[in-house]
Length: 258
Image (tube, rainbow, N blue to C red; front, side, top):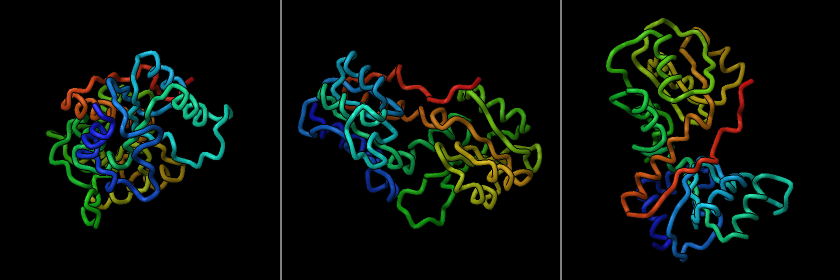
């Protein structure tokens, strides 16, 4: 199948027009006119993941996080990013990324994460946004209320979270849950204003915890854990068009807990 046809299928779900202005979703390396037999699905593109694609005979890597995000001024062995680019070019492996284009759409990263946690009536967290695709953060409801401790246990068990950092909640009753996969601290006050009992995201800073403490149950988990299900969304898309795909085994969080 032509790479362009695969990209068209992904972008029918996650159009590049949905990405944030600062993002770099889309083609990272390669020629859209080439034939593709199999695809490796990953959250991040690292040299280990590129090596895995070579070993698996995959001509294309589809990732959530763009390989080319920050400026690349040299292609040498000094950085992981540059090594991955050099390896991909050497082995003729194409790379395509769908980042905030997948975050922002209904049925994308945040909708799927909300469904995993048992939420229903899932809506955009910022409904007044003028953007066509405004699911960068979402809010939904549990079928039945639960205690804060029980919800924390659900997050741990359902997502296999390696760690959970959290603040005190306003009360011990959890029904309305807001979330944003990846770095979503910017939506903490939107979650409070929308009456969420808890807000789940990643990469929160100390003062963001301090500001949220006692106002909302702020739950912070590993960034990779919160978005690794992007690979399953990609698999659903590619399975529907009959292209062989493999979920990377080398795609793991860089954060280890001592």
